Length: 206
Ligand code: ADP
Ligand code: 5GP
Image (tube, rainbow, N blue to C red; front, side, top):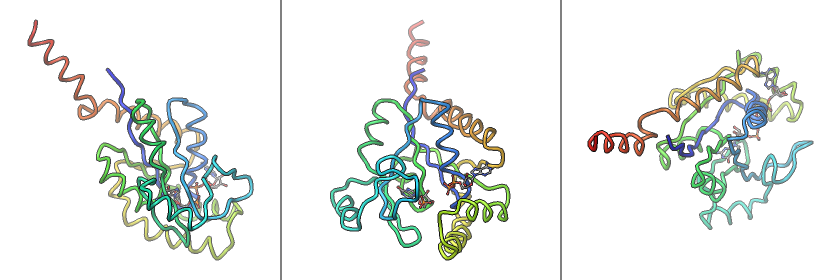
């Protein structure tokens, strides 16, 4: 079976643990490529330009949009975020799975352009735990935390549009679950039409 690269979109409320989960997934399985987004927000302590994000000005972001350099983009709590086109297209053409860790508006833009994409939503075990993780991360002011929690309320309305949800309670278990879901997606008939066609031809030639 010839494995074709697929886009895996990972969304979830701020603080649910998407970043932590994706870093661990990439560490354990080297078959995935993680897309690095462009953003107009400032780096958090420890974040490195080109690793967590490409940190750009508003002008630079608008230039990326006008050059068709992003496959999707969206506004999130006062800032812009977008996915650079070239990395995604290069990896897919090499048969490599690409993970996009993006919010819901971007996820739906991706599903329209790439109907084959797998949309996965990372849930916290409870709302109280979500708040605790956001506060515990200690990277945002109380005001921004409240904005992110109210955004979570809005985003919770769109979860049914996703293909799968995973609960990030035990990190190890969640990483394995995400890997299993992606692996299962590769086994759908719709993602293996060439192989099915080959076997049909062989059967006709027997
Ligand atoms: P997101 O990328 O979804 O905003 P982060 O990956 O930054 O979230 O995680 C938010 C906080 O929760 C971080 O401090 C992280 O260490 C913690 N965290 C992530 N996953 C878990 C987990 N399974 N159990 C407990 N804490 C977690
Ligand atoms: P954060 O500021 O916490 O890193 O990210 C805020 C939100 O923006 C998260 O929900 C994250 O998934 C989302 N995000 C990050 N990169 C992109 C992107 O390229 N496009 C879109 N649409 N959302 C993104």
